[in-house]
Amino acid sequence: MAEDKGVGVPEKVAWILVRDHRVLVTRSHGRDRFYFPGGHREAGESDRDTLVREIDEELRTAIDPDSMVHFGTFEIGEGHPDHDPFRMICYVADHRGELTPSREIAEKAWFRYADRHRVSAVDGLVLDALHRSGWLA
Image (cartoon, rainbow, N blue to C red):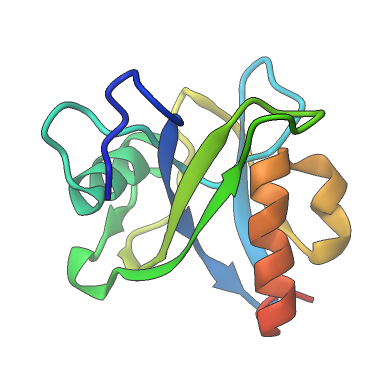
């Protein structure tokens, strides 16, 4: 995967955790929209390194890197009315420990497909894919 080096489309590595046909999302302080947990790579990081670090930072839980499976890469391109170009690389993975939001996270929630209007445009594309796959009610 290409790294975000300030050129091209910004990227985020995100974690998809589904339980009982609901998906985990988080909301940062000062934001109205919810997002999939994860974040941007730091210099030299792989997707795997990024996801492990970001999920520990945001939710104080340990991703099992050996269980990571690429769910899909979702992109909003130029000209989207509600969002600048953005790419999100999504993985499902097992974890150990409770899901305890850190100080940077205002709230965690479990969304159904009906909550799609509460997420960003690119996160909505992921919800669409989860719904089509039968993972999300």
